[in-house]
Length: 377
Ligand SMILES: [Zn+2]
Image (cartoon, rainbow, N blue to C red; front, side, top):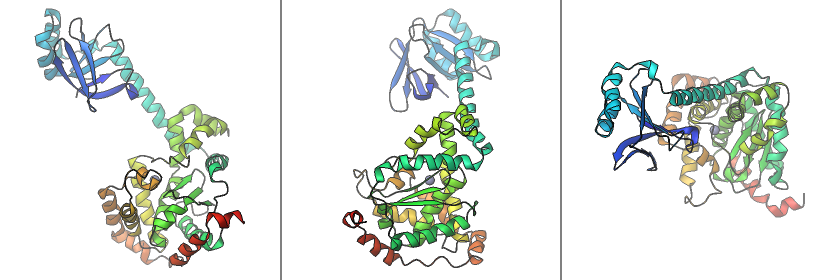
């Protein structure tokens, strides 16, 4: 375990490989970048929770700390240090006294831990807010997020009605069956769908054109709806803004977080909520499909359909959903494995029939709602 603390690094720290080159101790980062400290004048301290970590710093580089563990650091540094440091490496390192915690590294570690705990607790604190806060934030953010979509909202019943039928069944099969949803269909080539806190769902026609079957639309909408009921967007906002923002939200003031919420849900840049929450949403989407009467395999099928339509990588407008939801083979496999589990099959067996949606009719109606048609509306 070797690494470096430096103010220039994102998060203030990074793993690195340490080695000696010429007159320098060099830390090579994962991307190949290097941070160095001169061997002459190197200041060594021994610390770490178990007293086996060597911290190296130099007064010419305040804030920069290269560190590594016991024997490998001893082997690396012993040929290059003076008698006093050599004794430190040979004697103190073996003894591992906690009393020699280097103040800077100790402070940095404590600061990082505090920041991490604060960001974690900000996310956890969301659980203490009433859900009405999500709805207030979503309804306030929606017109700002959709500002660019003016004149592009599709209202044709032939397109909207079947999607509403799917959405209603998803909500009824979800963890919050009584929650109202607010659906907006936007004419755009962007292959995307997303949901904002409180139940505000946005679907782009580009996505509808890529999908083969209604249950695949149900798959992506069930995944997005799980971000709503799991309050993943709220957690994301809270984690990026911290505890104060959550306190403001608790007091009913969304203005402080509105800017970052709008940025988070901007049309061009819909983000992933992190691997853990994405996998949880995949799994819940599989169950929602089964409870809603659809084939739960459609979650895996949806990923495969999107990937199969994937254009060349230089097409940045297309397949936004896939790029923010990486379609790893293991993700497809996980969704498929869950769909075939007996308890999921049992959910489907006791479910009502899925809403009847004529996909070809929806697609045909979509083709008739061109920009010219919209201008007459
Ligand atoms: Zn997602």
